[in-house]
Length: 121
Image (cartoon, rainbow, N blue to C red; front, side):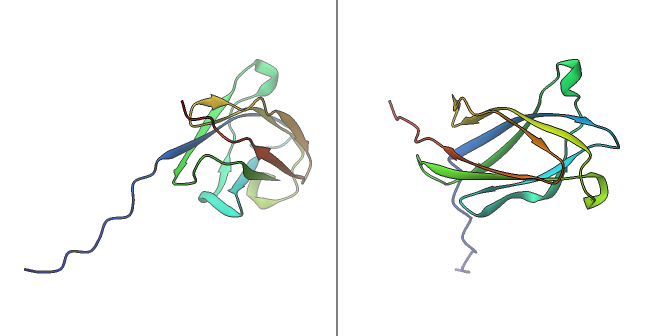
């Protein structure tokens, strides 16, 4: 019998960022990190305008456990240039639980926050 490569463990946790932007020049981009580990494959563009009342969801899956966790969001502008505008963190959910986290990032700014532990019930 041939040895089959093992499959990666299934992702049990989901972090969802509700983001919007008001940019003076192109769509703002961000890179997110959870406990120092990059989420996603690189910069992600936020397309929806905060001033119009829209929120865009970005979901990431992993096996991170109940927490607490450190979430970092690095704001960059279009084409990796200095951002001109605001990126709004409208909401953050972890495993479906709203964390009551929100903020507005200006220019080329990083933001670090703690995602609280999720209560298993």
